[in-house]
Figure 1 (cartoon, rainbow, N blue to C red):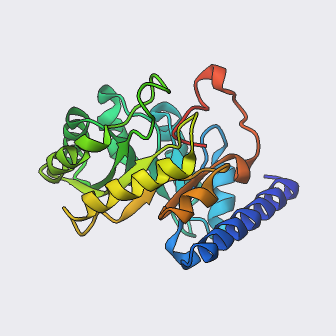
Figure 2: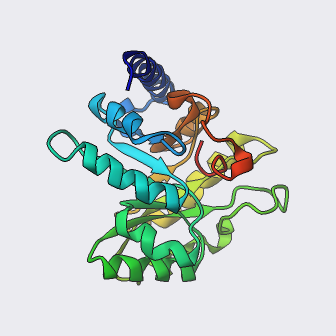
Length: 251
């Protein structure tokens, strides 16, 4: 890695942290309440290692094939010393990929159906691991954003109860994406209401994953405890969406 690239990452990280701190203070919250997940999809392991050295501990990926390789590469880079990352899988998980994802991810953000939860549980059991999961809540009105995943708000409690019965899974909370059209504040307020319902079922379900580079302030104002930031940290994606590597729920 060049000194120039390291300097860019450091400056971007400082700017993002300043934004999170300002948003937290404006909402009457402590900045320490907000976890930053650096969405490193399409960027190299060297960028992850540099941000680890700068104090970032949580990283997000959204494609299993890329993530599995990068996790191994970062592990090799950190083999001798230094902090190790906590990996978040922030993309949609195909059931056939659930075993692979469960072998390296610490947190899966987009669980929206019982069958996926079961598959992740089997994968975690196979690897003798514990896996934190977040329930993806649909915040889109009607079918305004066709094709986006997420469980309907009125079905979240049912899904949460199912996840609580799956061995090796720990229900950590909820996640949501602002709608492509509509008011993000209204959507995130709806997510906060659903989060409270899920929290009433389990003391571990405290995470509200919401907010990305463009809307993190709105999300923090409505109770987000974890923001997923990619572009504002790393810059423009090295590989664009036509290759399938730049879609939600990352950033």
